[in-house]
Image (tube, rainbow, N blue to C red; front, side, top):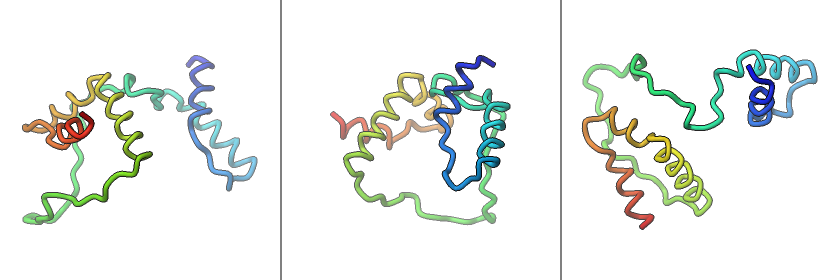
Length: 115
């Protein structure tokens, strides 16, 4: 693995201040060893079709169909829109839509609010 990439991964991973020097060194060594599992941008994320998450809910369990959410603060909105723009630039919204049979209504609503 390229030393520049390892350095970039180490710079981006936040390690808490509550570790001893020895613990911090061990964490940094683990990050160096497994730097290839980190992505530095969404463009590096690859779609896989062999993973399926199951919640393990009992048969017949029902829940709310809609989640009520507080309005976003301006910093939250800026972060979300930037993340969505990045996702769309890499084809991420198409990947999300491909997993369900219907287009993502929430994504359309967010786009409409931005206009």
